[in-house]
Structures are given as C-alpha cells and as structure tokens.
Length: 256
Image 1 (tube, rainbow, N blue to C red):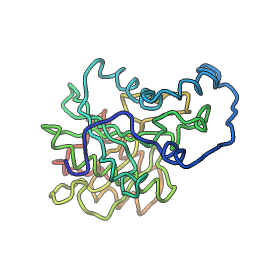
Image 2: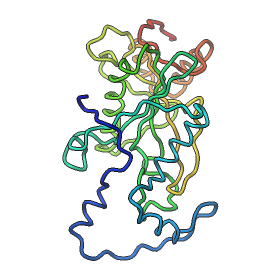
Image 3: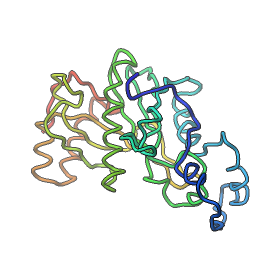
Image 4: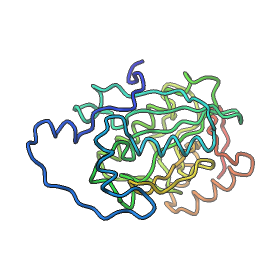
C-alpha cells in the first residue's frame, strides 16, 4: 500500500515514547472545562490505552452526515511517521462515499487525536482543524493521490508553522494536483466543509476545512491581486452549480 497501512486507531504518541525515558514529570493541573468532563475524570480516563477523544470527535462529526456508513480507512505507515523521523505527520485518512456522486476524504492528525493532559481545555484542538476533500471519482483507489496531497499540506503546516484558514488559496507550481495527469486542476481554495460541521471538544475547537480544486488560470489571477475578494468571487461562482464544492479533475472551467 505504499505510504499507507492498515488503519489502527491507537498508535504510540510522542509523549508515550518520551515517557519511557522520563523517570519523573511535574504534575499537570488544569481548570475544568465547562460542558465537558472534569480534568480529574479526563486524567483518569487517559490511563486507558484505547481512548482517543480527538479521533472520536472526527468520527462523530462525519456520522451526522453519513450515519452508520463504514468508511474506507487508510493509515500512514508507522515507520514513515515524523515521530520516528519519517515524513508523515498524519496518522491516516477516512474516505466516505456520498450519494451525491463523490468521495469525501478526511484527515486524522491535524488535531490532537489521543489523550494528552496538556491538551485538555485548550481553545483550539492543536492546529484547530482537519482537512477534507470531495473528489468526483469512480473508486476509492482513485483517491490515493488526494491523500498524498493532503499529507503534503500537513507536512507544510507542521514544518513551517503556517496553518490554513477559510477563504485562503494554495497556489502550487502549476503542476496538476494529481501529478502525472493532464488535469487542469492545479491549485486549491479553502472553505469550511459544506456538510460536516465543526465543534468544540475537550481538546478545543475542531473545524473541518475543505480543499477545492481550481485551474491554474484562476489561481494566477487570484495570486496577482492577493486579496480574499478574488477568492470569494471564484467561490461564489462555483457555488452556483456546485454548492458542495466537489473537485472534478476532468473539469477545464475557469471562473475569472
């Protein structure tokens, strides 16, 4: 499976690895977060090896859209993860099949997935969002390149410290989003996911930022003016006949 492996919910966190060599740590004390379990309860539950509160937040958000659908799961290979010196900063991806004719991909790892005392009660859940992508495709296998692309964007954020926000764009270098293809979709716009709603959690706010493919032509015009007004103009035009912002890699349409 290349960079991907079988999906495993519980994997070693950096704290767990470090704790093997730490004899004693200063105790962490935090105020209780209103509306959520107390810090004492969180601390006690954190002793469980199979509790992943951040992971559960993502699953619950998608369950509101897809019900009991069991998505296709892909995990980045353990030895490739940044924790062990590799290039992968995400734990994995889930892919849901929409009855609207696209596959809905979500990342796992931009937020704090596993219990971590330091993360309790924060305003934002690590970077504050997971990435999503709605791809018009015939099979899950046709989505593999998109997961690699999302992994590259995660690596950019983790290594540069620059995170993404709604109504921003990712220019790229003019190459197709799907490398080695002849697609005209070369750049990305960023919106709030049109279906999956963000929510507060015990680790802080967890939003879902959707990536939307656009042509190099439109991206160059946006980049030339460098204003959100042009991003918003393209999004408004796309929304007219594509309200869910589905990326069709066969599209050649320009909006500017």
